[in-house]
Length: 94
Image 1 (cartoon, rainbow, N blue to C red):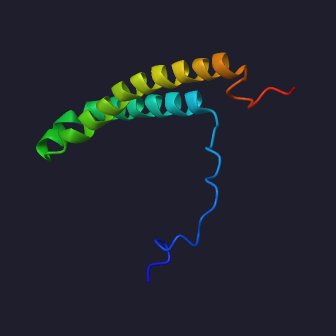
Image 2: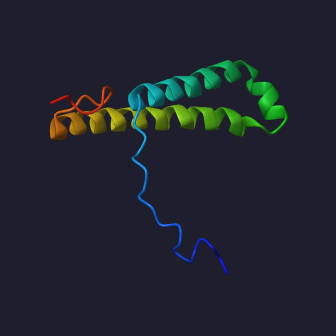
């Protein structure tokens, strides 16, 4: 008998984790671009060893990170507008 499908472990879902989302995504985006720029001078080596996808993966991560940064900034603004809370500080004290 599978204990997970029996339904004996039902409980409430935990609250979603919130944190400095904008800072995290921005930091990750910067890291992807830095990795791309650090590897760029070694393009010849990557090409000789058939690893140029490493560079393009870093560039794609940076570009997608720009979209992600825009998205989470817009999301935080919508959360603040809808709930009257500061996304970084949590719910406003009443």
